[in-house]
Length: 252
Image (cartoon, rainbow, N blue to C red; front, side, top):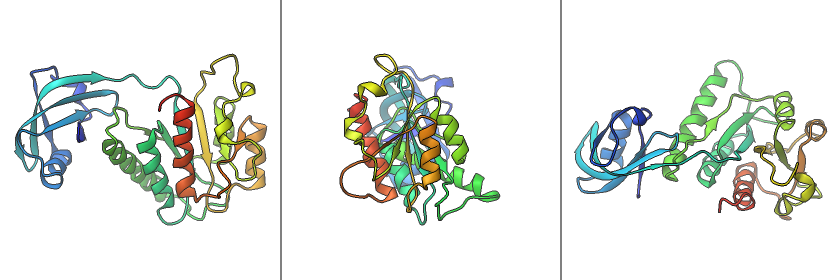
């Protein structure tokens, strides 16, 4: 498969081998005018919730593309979800982080209003920012041909993260931490053999986590971890750690 386009209601329309499935609206326009798709090419359609059909393009119009289905694949969600909690950052650094993290395998991303975040969401900016993140994640999932589009959580406070730490395996990137991410999971990090809880990775803003934030998360059960000797930007740290965790979780 060289490309993936999304149709949210794909599961509700005939999509067995031999059926024809239409792509309309913005997705069809993107396929026809941006990707310059042609009759006879192979492509795939997904619903973002595990269903992907592959097939051959039989018709291309500016706002309508038709695919003859020759394959159907259903992928279950991962047993252990990997969530990136990304602190809001100035410029587009937080957006770069969630884009790359999506391509590398994050199952969910959560925007976090950290104490040291230069960027601030409030009022109408909250809904606008969350919608912007959903668009970035959706496009990144298509680029990576992922059967599941990651969820984008609501803007979180530190108090929200404290609650999340009590019911997940939370790792906090902290350059001064004694534990290395490459050593995770250690035996003491496991509840009883294989730990079924989801993994949550927390990445701070440009100035890092404040001592109060770090202490509150540790008190709730989070584990501070560091990457290598380099101090990475907030736009780079999360994706680098997601890649390492994909190996630790046996995904790669």
